[in-house]
Image (tube, rainbow, N blue to C red):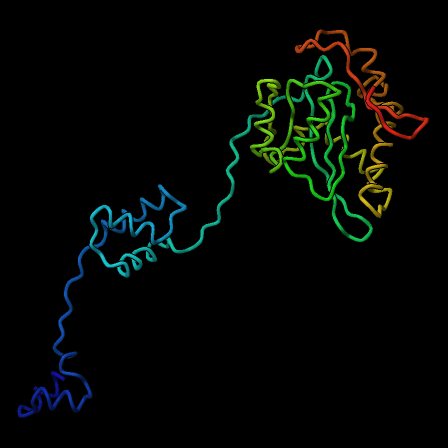
Amino acid sequence: MDYARSRYKDLSLRQACRIFNISSSVYCYHPLKRADDSAVYDRLVGMAEKWPTWGFWKLNHRLRLEGSKLNHKRVYRLYKEARLHLRRRTHKRVPARIKQPLLQPLVPNLNWSMDFMRDTLWIGKPFRTFNIIDDFNREALNITISKSITSERVVKELTELTQWRGLPSSIRVDNGPEFIAQALKEWCEHPSRNIELIFIEKGKPSQNGYIERLNKTFREDILDSYQFEEVSQAQAFAYEWMWMYNNERPHESLNNLPPTHFLLKYGKLHPHPRGYTEFPTFQQDINTDNFLYI
């Protein structure tokens, strides 16, 4: 445009715009200097860090309450420049765990260990097992098998177990969602129980070695040896295996004694912190093929 008008002196602005097919208002437009938005940008980022669950509109309304006069479209441009419109992946944060030595307790019911296992039925449907042992004599206290085991189910099984076995002083677990759930924490911290939850470090199953050893034996003897059609069938085999494991199978770590024999021989050498003197065990009624706690 400027070159054409300087070359042809008689060419008017209107004629030049018509030749180059440009609107005269576009040619004469001078953009206004945009105001500095850095303060609003920084405030948006700060609010998003302080309230990470707030979306754009809630942040925009908060800016309005603080006196901002910016149009919501302009605020949204800054919102996107800060990449706040992208959905962030959040993970439930687990507190740092402190490594604690894996020691054999001096008395029964001092420390229990819990863990989950997974397997499938013959049709491919998965099921889980919830295992509990007493660290003192490696006694299998519970093996619950179900297609789904939630934190509420964990609390239910523990309640039933403590009704006949008594309360432990502590329970060692990993960082699974069922164990870090609020339901289990509240159950353990109840004044009538006062049970300490001991969490192993993340990704360190060796710190829960007692229950891992039971898991290995249970998988070799039952889960890898049989193909089950129903969960109830697997549960029946688990009960029979528990009785054999506790009463017949020698354990090298227990001077080649079964857990119940070791309990009878060494279980009362030291006083229990809760004053327990008897520790019922999981037994089988040979007359009815039912399982009792005596």
